[in-house]
Amino acid sequence: MTLLLTLWLTCWLLLGADHVAAAEPPQPAAGSEIKGDVLYWEEDELIVRELSGHQVRLRVTPETKIQGASGKLKTGDKIVANVAAPDGPALSITLQIPDSGPPAANRR
Image (cartoon, rainbow, N blue to C red; front, side, top):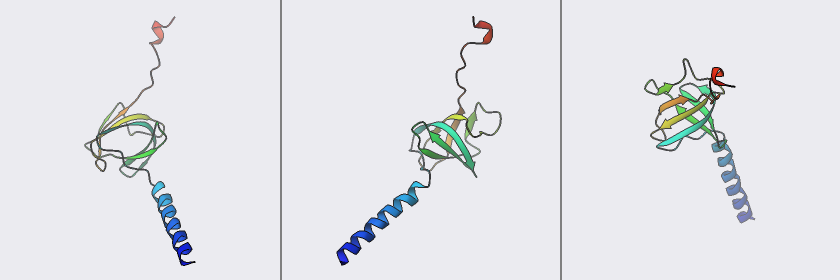
């Protein structure tokens, strides 16, 4: 009976820890490029849903180069970000404009 209780408690602790960890979006990998959609801002972090569906936190500092946006990035913006270290800030974030094809004057 003690063995069964110990097994149950161990499983409960392991499953409980997984559920708590899953609630927090992970940090990006070192030296990685993140492509995805902006979900929201949380203080100095940009929460992004990658193309794979995973959520990632990007720390944005005054040194982070943001290109292609005239103001603050907003929900739904498609971006590409470069990160040098897992806990480090985003080095650059570029707003991706979908290709709308040739200019209207050149269309036939």
